[in-house]
Image 1 (spheres, rainbow, N blue to C red):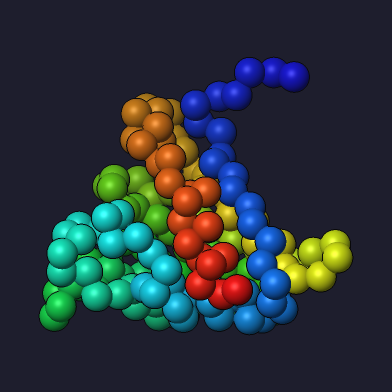
Image 2 (image 1 turned 90 degrees about the vertical axis):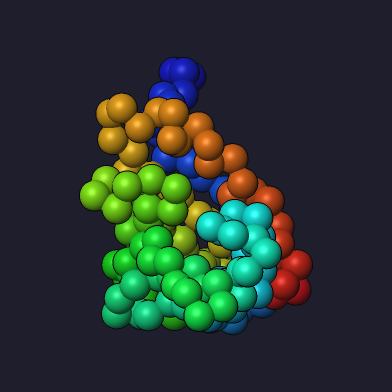
Length: 143
């Protein structure tokens, strides 16, 4: 097997005991309920995440909002994708692509792929070590 490039997509998966549509709603509409506030601009003032299916993804801190993405695909039957620039320049977005498919034995397999890393972004990419923990929080929320 070839060595992993530091620009390869980051992949995290979790199986949750709900339908794909319920998993999608839990991931998108309820993201602010399971997101770890420490991974926001100011954990003490974090109050949620707002996602416009046709537009921006924003961290909400009281009456301030910080745009950190833009929805690219919104399909409640199986896929959510967005441009992503939380922690790096908006001019050089990466992508989040999350799929929701029937899991063997029941429930839904949620597969998150954080990709689109450009040459020179290796140091930024190395900071994204929290996807597994975030998906654990998400799974606990929807279970």
